[in-house]
Image (cartoon, rainbow, N blue to C red; front, side, top):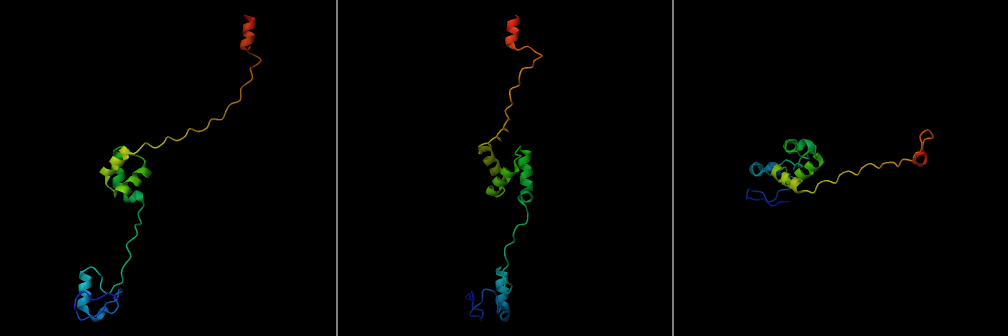
Length: 127
């Protein structure tokens, strides 16, 4: 239980607001202070936007400046709270992403010389 902040004729107020209906002036005071009065406390809203939606305008600005890697852009925007100027500074000072490794090339088997064409050794003998 919470102690009554002002002497309004109450001795205690429960954290859930139960029993506040008996003192409308206290309920009005708590509501004016943003404490909600007799209503139950609400949970903070959980964002339902994807990062791409949340940072749409900022990503567009970064694209206009030539920063096309959205995964990196979003990561930097999240760390800067969406401040594009700071994000650009960080993007410019980041080490470049490593280049993807080239695909392995399968070795080719040596081809046998064709019987129709003379080999280099045969050409030497003929000359």
